[in-house]
Image 1 (cartoon, rainbow, N blue to C red):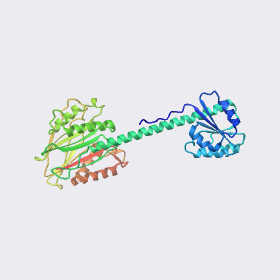
Image 2 (cartoon, rainbow, N blue to C red):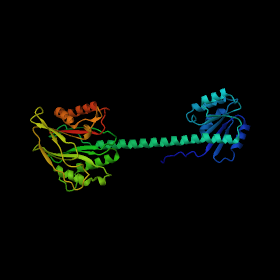
Image 3 (cartoon, rainbow, N blue to C red):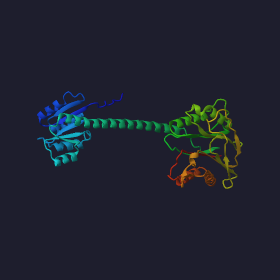
Image 4 (cartoon, rainbow, N blue to C red):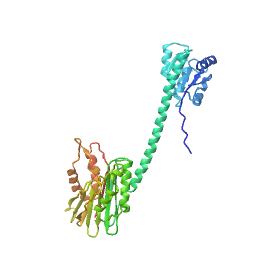
Length: 396
């Protein structure tokens, strides 16, 4: 069904409420021949509200003294009714008394004329008040349409955000690799995404992408790149070789073809038989590996990468690095939103302090992420993350 759109008001519509037909006729003659003014007369003031709601006047001329109901009472009725309270009202009276005028204005009248006024004066006042009211109606209509559009956009963005988050992986609580993660987007549509999956029974791939910016464009790019990794849709790429994967991403997602959007990325493959992690990255913070004989004696290793941000340079080769994992191994992969927070003094939390914090708390595995979330919120001047908070951990 097509939506019914209200037609814009283009002319003044006058409603005169006066118990004297001779006044009604006199005003009709004053307005006769004015193409931009439609005229309506009502003798019975008890039907004022009903009539006004039907014809929708842009200005009401209201007699002050009528036998059925006091004119000022009619003014009060109009102002108490939601559909008429904003319509301009011009009180017509034979009295030129300051107290009567003051009372009329106090009750909500917009103007006061001693009847009968000069024709040109009446036309001028009708047009003046009608023009202002019509402009108000147009503004209200515009605001309503804008609000409706914003609600529709917000609903669509919320649906898109739900879809993006639905792509995040399940948490593995059993098996050779256990996983957990935390993800808090800073906006409805974020530029962060991550995933992991078994390539086969031996090799486990894991990755995190951080698109520059937020919103629809960033989310679309992150989802597209994520799907390329999940489905293995990078032609000619060996997904067991992280360097090849990063090179394939760079070739596939050049920023000149992506609305000038680029992203950082970190990609790793865990060999569960040899307990080796091979990894590569582009412009991304280093993953952190705690490894050793046990949690107490484990040391933290920065798995840094030297490749450039994905999409910024053509024909780039990304090197693959390798690290051995001991009997104890906990790996954290994250975006810069977990540590780039504004702390006291309007400065950013130093990365070295972040590393020191993770060295102390990371041995607790998955609970370390909750501790990190609480710690960064406590440090933040505004107690919020300014960027997407994305981190996952692998227990190897």
